[in-house]
Image 1 (cartoon, one colour):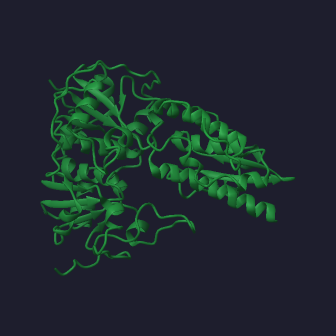
Image 2 (cartoon, rainbow over the protein chains, first blue to last red; image 1 turned 45 degrees about the vertical axis):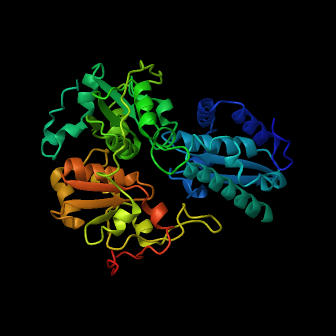
Image 3 (cartoon, rainbow over the protein chains, first blue to last red; image 1 turned 180 degrees about the vertical axis):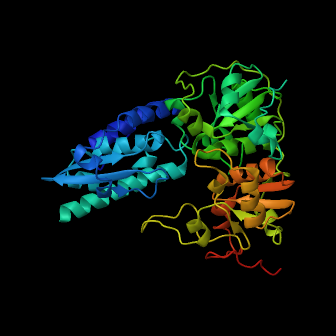
Length: 147
Length: 299
């Protein structure tokens, strides 16, 4: 097993361990499961795409928004069904980060995308897309909690 | 034995009509044992969401690239890839994929490096097949392994390396990336590295023709007259017989390579797969910035 990582929240550590326990091929299957489980946007954002931030690092149109309520963070993201890989990454982050507090999110290692054992199956550009999502989530969290 | 050709009228005006099949033709021929359908997408998971019944998946990143060296797989690896997907040397391959066949054309180009004779594209690709309501399944096929000979990759005819491009000045070069990539004013967030190139801009004298101009909104190829206007006239290829195309890593330019080679019949077209991620990081190669092609360097 991997060393306990103090900076990595339990949820993301669990996801990482789940991926690393699988063969390369099955990791893609798990990513597909995450893609299918990307939560729908809450209704208040569904009709207001302008409130969401586009993730320019992703080739497919990915949008996300972060809400901070009483120190707890909620991450919402949307990505097209034709981009399951990107949806999977968005889903890992949205599910793994939502409910955490600001400090925990800002402490997530920036290279998390490269820790989940997908560097062979997924091109580096894609993984950088996930890194871009994380960076934008952190920036939004920082802005929201400074306000 | 290869499968019969699609005699659709639209294809007859192209230089090599036998390189395309229509969605209707493919649906009719899905059970033809001489044919293997290959899906090749940008998104490594898209095939798993649903694919043409019986189609096998070949991924550009995990299947066609060498895992260590920046190069394509070698003859034995290619023979294994084909064999385990039920493809024999004389099998007809029809490739299709997402994004107007962008990655499908890349796979077709790599298959051509190994001299696979009969490899065709599905006009309109994955999106058109689905838009027309044709059958899709998530059932994984289980192809029977066949023997595929070990063939050496031939990089001399359709592939260009950096030195070839340096020796090519004076002949047509086509940059198929977006206008922003071409000019060198790339959008990227602060403290975030550019996509694998240290400099922005384009190879001097290269004309900008974003790859997707060759496709209609439904992903099918434009007519030969439209393509002639775009490339021979618009991009200054005229009746040149030796053209090099490039993009970021050689995928989008494979699409343009297909158009120039098989639809317009330009005799010698090479894809520079090192493309901008090599050129934009190489030491002392000439670079032009802005919207103009720029001058060839004086040698």
